[in-house]
Length: 300
Image (tube, rainbow, N blue to C red; front, side, top):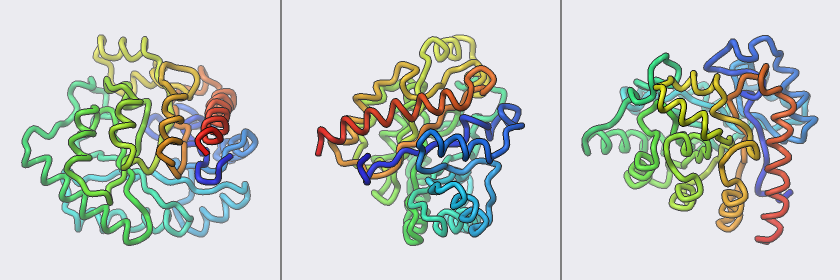
């Protein structure tokens, strides 16, 4: 596998942060053991990981795994830059001391991603001034984290302020290059976008990639029946690469053509009782591994 592209996984395949009942009984050691056995090189953080830098380093070393990154629940839509910098301190330090170079930034202010509310009720910026103010705060925050060696990887997300392709377009137009984009093929497809087109528009800003697939029939039900985000997850809207409708051959080819350097992270929220963790994590890895090995070899 090319040294500039690594395949990691989020522990969501085994246990869910937003819905602790999904895989809540599974020990972290099971996820780490199975992930390593499958071939993954690293893990993103989940709610069962230690949050003290040395303890995390010791744990990952036991499995010869790297720290990929970790989700940060930001609130720049409501908080000042100074408040956000103070809040992010321990998390930023945890990432930096464990070798992660990107931080998954999820805007949770007013978000309904974990609430029992239909997705059309998500928050929105309605004026140019609101967009500009948010972008300016994000620019300053991203400049700060980058000064500590960790780049913001902004996660467009269902149920949040930045959800649709148009939202992503606007955010990227208003922010500086310090603000990296976390491209999530599953979320952008759920939000009504063509994943490959969105990736190609913003590939120069992409610093992290979440690889989930989408079952389009479930997404249609979610929209038609006004499900919440978590209802959609429970009913199987997402799955691993190679098990849905997303054009992963096209996505990996585009990343290779633009010399993307970073992580591809399998992150597929599913009920492990219905979608057995090991089998699906293995399928996601093998799908990406085959595409990366073939595509990057051709691009070399």
